[in-house]
Length: 585
Image (cartoon, rainbow, N blue to C red):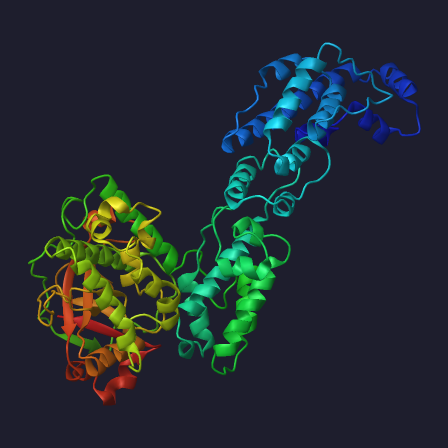
């Protein structure tokens, strides 16, 4: 009885009688309680009050669903007023009526005097069942009956359109505290998020890069996300096809469906991954199922920090906050501004630091990356405003050409999976990439959409392993227009580094892959490799966009320049854990 009162889901007094002494007749049991001064009447009153509260909560929940379905809710006021003094047995009887829409046979041991209440009760119940779509009648049964309901499976069994399914899923989420049985499995949802992380790792990394255990661990930490998608968020259509279910997070998060998707993904990886000498399958399975990564772990990876950085920039723009040292209406990188440090020397340092990249992400690097990408958007918007309307077609065509240019080359603008699954279709979508959208990008983005803005998806290379740089800038280096074509375009790879302050000396790290890819760009494509340094305040600074600015840029144009930075005989000396400590003075 105490448990029922605690969870505010009391049942009938008769049920308590049977549970306490099922071998004693009701009249005799009540007589004994009275002789022992057990407050049976007070208990009935409390149970009736709590039963009515629970019933009222379910009634309002059902009316809320009708409203979400664009159906007219049925006024429950008269019904609830009529039941104000009803005891728990009467409430239980009416709940059964609500569940089926048909008045049940009365309990022989309980006196249900509904003579005056019946018309009011029947009017509400008939109205609700007539308004609720036939294929959603199971919801009334699940709310008002004592039978455990497996909500998502019940919903999936109905032939209901996807828009309605999304409405019901959101309703279940909003009223999950009302339901006897939780409608969703939160652990499975987080396993789904981790599954998507592994899928992104595979899509955004060249298989040749995944031959070491440490690389898998590092990539998982980089891409790991602590976000929780909405239960009604869409999942890849291929997942729904594989599982034969509706394409919503709620539907892939029931039964053993995450395991099925994981096995399918591992089969795809196994078919293309070069032969390796470690158990990558166990690593992936443990990560998806338990959320653990070998060695150190992180609650927030680079992907999380970058999404937060984009959200902060969107907020600054939306609220007319300061970014780039000026107002939000000004360009992050105004045309014609001379960037300090372009003529400074780049050298490698043999001291100061043990090398080896840190796997703990504090956010400054991702803030610098997001800031640079926003600057690229400003540059492209200005370029479009200064050129004929047809140049957007030229822009899409030139960007698409990057994919064909990288074939048979030793450098990559994006890894192949990203091109084929996302970017090539995007470049063919004139609605997503048009003059108006790009030109007015500041009005188009918000906290949630900035990171997925089409132009950001095109220029953002930070989450990919292989290309060896962070951002594609279609307008070339900031400091000059050398190498631009007749349209003013010059696609260059930009490696972004967060630094302290705006004056030399600047210290940062360059990975051996970044160094190797820089040589490939300048050697095989005659394409300058740009290192763009961004002054970013300390991690955790609330208004960081107002204190961030591009501090310097180094443009590497020839293989000779790069080889001069690291003399071959000193390579082993300066490379520590895959990183080189670099300095610009």
